[in-house]
Image (cartoon, rainbow, N blue to C red; front, side):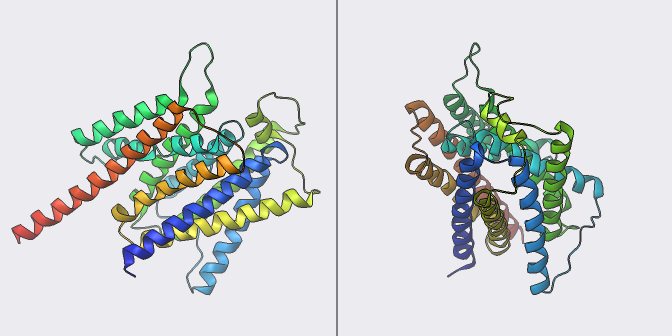
Length: 314
């Protein structure tokens, strides 16, 4: 098995793990507190990461040569996925997953603004197609606009920005340091929102997403706590799969396989939650997927062209 094949396997398996995690998070949306899940997952993630680093004889460190960027990135990541999980409480898991995968479009735009990367007509076309896909899923109506649909898109934007910041610090901060910052950020964001809003009881808000966010924490229900622990373990394992996938394989080759998560979400949504998408949402998912794939393929083609031109000059 080649390095790229191993990377693809880890990506596909990691997406499956994340899909199961998302299903459990959606399942808890009517009974548990999302902030409690976030904080517990952050603590358990730190414990598992420290054990992994110790067993692999690597050093555990939270220091960064770019502390401001590390703090911003450490907060952006949990804020982004807090938004995504809030959306899961109110909309189909397949729609939320598809809207999140507009992230390649945001990465293209942000890489142009921040990293000064060139964006050609092909990528602009892909961005337009992806935007059409977003509109088909959201189906905006000014008189009855569902603001929950914005949350996965906001998640994709914050995630993309955090990944751009990762690129800026990859030479100085290891992937393990960056992951540590994310876990610490998850704990900080979860505790800050909880203590800011204070105590809360069910029924205060009619919206299921707000209820999920501000519900009182419960450590007495063994079923809920055990599911939270499983979510934490799956989340940590999924992150390790992705980290190792991108260390082993070529990103431009393995990245498109992240889209298998949309297939997982469609299957889970239909068989577990009984979710059925309308024709427009289904077409929108296809357009977003195709636009993301096209960006990945175009990026790979561009890199190969650069390598060929460099070789010819030699």
